[in-house]
Image (cartoon, rainbow, N blue to C red):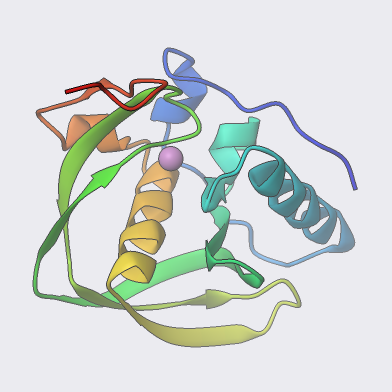
Length: 158
Ligand code: NI
C-alpha cells in the first residue's frame, strides 16, 4: 500500500463529475487500499477518488474507527429528514462550515470485493457518506455552507 497525494481546492479535478468504475479489478482494489491508508494518515473520516486525482466513482469512509466502508459506483437510493453539523474536508485544509444533510440515507454500491451492498446510515455516518458522495459529482461542502471559516489551531481564550 502507498500514500497518495491529496488534491486541494482550486484544482479543477475536484470539480468534475466522476465516471463509473464498472468492475472492481485488482487495480481498483489497490487504489481503494491506498485511499484507506491515505485517509487514516491524514486523520480523515472519508476520502473520495477525485481527492487523490482519480476521476472514478468510488470513495472510502471510516466514520467510526476500525469500521471501514468502500463504495464503488454508489447510489443514494433514499434520504430522510435533516440534520445540521460542522464539516471539514481534507481537500480544504484548515477550514470548516455548517452544512445541512439528510438525517438518514440508504445507499447501495459495490464493496471492495465487487459485491453489491445496501446500507442504511443515520447521524454522523450519513453525513460522511453524503459528503463523500458529493465529491463524485464535483461538489464540495463549501458550496453548501455559507459560514466557511478558518479553524483556529488552539482553543480560543475567553
Ligand atoms: Ni471532502
